[in-house]
Image 1: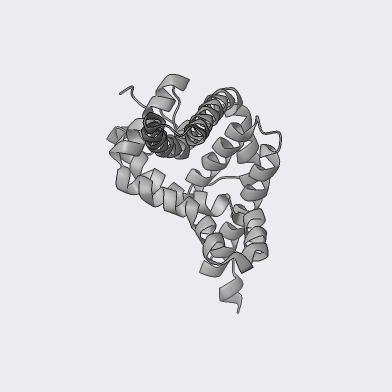
Image 2: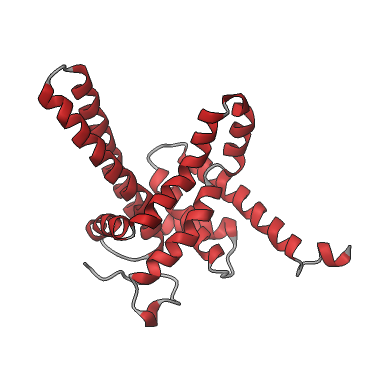
Length: 221
């Protein structure tokens, strides 16, 4: 029994990761409540998460708040840009649906495609912000470049985040169990799985001699 519960055991490391995910999920949810801080909160979560999947020593709470503070300005501006773009896309699609016109019906599919591209960029932009030092313009541009260049991985990242919503649709009777999961690990668990993918993707865009560094500037494409 001592071996199972020892600090070097696989069970202990597993439970330690579960605790980290729950803590990160709660921190992220709480810090997202003001809405305007969503970008900084998600960036901070990914900063810690990417360190966890690289097996780097990291203090979860301290690391989260340090990253939140360091990335607050840039992450908030990026979030506001994406929030405005998302609202505009939603309004355009809604407007096209309200007006029964052939041209607007075609435009609806154009906006649907743009919404998919937008989703891919949103999934990448905050992990990129957490991993690299760059301008807002280049961070946004690199989110598009990486998402398209690594499309198979991007689809897998989307599935990681969409799995719980698919489950709600398939098993609506599990709603309260799924709600409890969302409160405990609904943000952090998909981010944890996605971080393994982001770690692989980011290495492809980094010079070999810089791969082991925690944060490096991503060259302008």
